[in-house]
Structures are given as C-alpha cells and as structure tokens.
Image 1 (cartoon, rainbow, N blue to C red):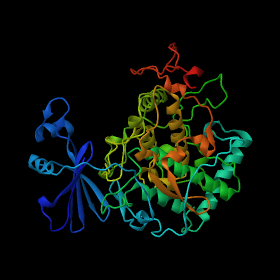
Image 2: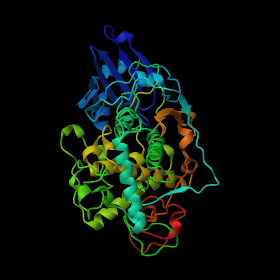
Image 3: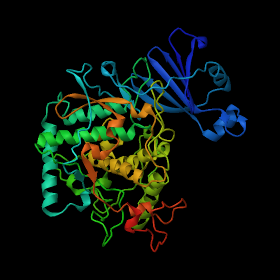
Image 4: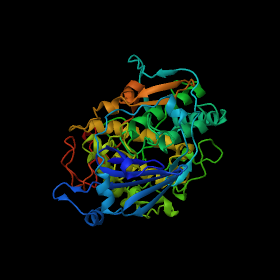
Length: 492
C-alpha cells in the first residue's frame, strides 16, 4: 500500500509516500476535502506488470472515498496509468509498530463516518484521572463463570436470568449520559473506535478502526468484558454472566454423550421481544419478529452497497435449505480458515492506511457469520455507530467470542498471531468503576484468564459439515450417515 498526501498549495513533487503491502492509496487534501483511492498492485504474481486496462478488467473499479467533515461516499472511478507511474516514484519502507491509543488520541477525536453515514460520537476529549494498566486477575481457586447458550435456558434459571438482564439494562439506561458506564456512552465508545474519529498518533489524517482487520476479535472481547463487569456492578452480582446467542447451531440432537446444550439456537431470542422491557429495540427488521424464521448466516454482506439506500434482501429459503446454508457458511468461515490471517484478519499497524473494505482485510470471523447476523437483524444493527444501542449486540458478540475460542481447539496449526504489533497494541476503555484502563491485545487472548468459559453446544453440526469439499478436521469421524455428522468427537 502506498500513501500520498498532497497538502494545499503543494504539487505532485511534494508527495510523501510510505509502502505497505496490498494496495495503492492516493490521498489529496485540499480546502477541507480528502480523496482516497484504493486499488491492488499492478504487478501480477506470475506474469509481471499489467497495463491499467488489464488490471481494472480483472479487479473491477477503484473505490473512491470522498470525505468532507467525516462524510463518506463510495464511488467508482479509473485512474490513468500515468498517475500510477508518478506515484511509484515515491516509495519508501514503512516502520513497523503497534497501534497505541493515548490521551492525545481522545484529544484529537473528530467526526467519523461509516457506510456513508456521519458519526458524531467522540468521547470526552480530556480523560479525567489516571490511566491504569489492565491485567487479568484470574483466581484459579474460584470456579469459572459459564456463559451458556440462550436457547437452553429453561424454568427458574431462564426467569432469573431474563429478569436480571432486563434490570441490568434498565439501570444502565438510567445512568447519566456523561457516565462512561451508561448505555449511551457504551455505544459511543464502540462508535469512536469503529467509524474513524480517532486519528493515529503522530499523524494528521490517518484514521484507525477496529473493524475489518486483526483487531476485530480482541477489541470486541475487551468491550464485552467490561460491559459485563458494568452489568455485574449495577446488579451487585459479581457472578452475573452475559450468555451467548448460539445462532450458528441449526441442528437439535435428541441425546448427547456430553453435558451441554444441543438444541438449535438459530431463532431470534424471545427475551428481546417484550416491548415493555429494557432489552427491546423496535428498530429491527421484520425478520427478528418472526419466531419461526431462522437467522441467515449465508448472506454475503460484502456484496451489499449501503449507499444504494435499499436494505439487503434476504431470500426466503425453506427451513431445510437455510439449515444447509448455515452449516456450509460456518464450515467455510471457521473450519476452512486454517491460519490467523484468514480467520482473524489482516495486520493493521501504526502508519497503515485503513482499508474500509471487508473483502480485503477482514477475517472470515468478521464477515461470516458476524456481519451477516448484523444485516439480518437490521435497524440499528446495520451501522457501527448505532449497533450497540440494540442490546442483542452483546449476546451476538459473546457468541463470536466463543467461536474464536473454538477455532483454536480445531488444532492443525490454528493459532493467534505472534506478531508484537498485534500483541502489544494498546486500547483505552473505561471499566466498571469509571476508571480508564489501558488494555493490550495480549491481555485478553485467553477467555479463562478473564474468568469465563463456555457451555458445550452442537458445533459438530457444522464442523463436520458433510457437503464440504475441504479437508475434514482430524477429530471428525469419517462415517457420515446424514446431512451432518453429529458425533461428540467432532468437538473436543
């Protein structure tokens, strides 16, 4: 990737550049405007250089991003080859360093945007009090809190959990807006990290976003962890646990060799459908209000252009078709992702230009099923600047965390990045005591050190998806007698 900045009054000879792998970025700043073009390298790995026409016929159009005061619009264009030739004269090697969020990051926060919609969500520019390093305080003598699948909560347990969840969000909504633990500010901190208002330190115009790169999973784990701690504090219950919406389970087993939940969980959780409760959000599509409609994990949100103004159309598959498609999608997203880059996402370091395109840098864990579920619910969940205003957001992400944890257990070399630019990246998040905490990625990699674990569920229904052409994980039985192999040895 090559970044070029042309300040007002400068000419092409004044361009400064830094090299990153993957695409070419032309950024022109003038009179308050910023233009950003992205394209792939013109060098074909097998046949050498390609002409501009050859390149664009195979890759498609550029994405021209036009920003003014944070408003983003995606258009199509073609740059003449002469521009690429000029740009190639200014290539240097970029420095490798982790993203570090500091007081200055908050101080320079500005208007952001996501999918063409402006985002005014900067937290207070001046952080009051100290910034305290976060270190997990796991006590091995205490039992882990078990995050359970919502669809298997029944009887008294379901009643107690639902009442506590709804009371917790009622208390959170009642907090003053300037309280960092408030429901409003919880949304705003996600918005600030996820729509580009934060500027990289020592940069005038390089934004950062925890979506569409290798920070998606660890940052959201930090966010969910402190959100859960806030609910525990408000409820005065340190054992309260955010359970997960097990949307990836589409098959019910009548019996199982292991304890856990083996019931299909692909329907929208009923506890979020009571209009009189704090967990309700009316701004959802009709799909969330149809109790017999399973979630569609197969929707390819990367092909949807939100600037078209028309919500994505989800086909009306039969239940059998949807179950099959969901299984195939989960297999493709998780089992077929054999390395960190494909599952977690591409690197994003200090000095890198943000590529706001899920087809380029996002890991499969973010694209499917995460984005698909956001789109399926719709309403506030369409956009990064509003999605945490729907309480279902937190149970959705609790399951994404679980899937990340499961991905490691599939083995065969699946492991998190060892790159210090990932491990030592630092983010600032308020905790349950309104104290600003400095959290590194390396602090949140093991869910057990945070005090949580997950209930067993029927992951075998998609881990051993029969119709896949990919190699089946070694711990799956080779005997398949139905659409899914549901033997307990598929998930260890």
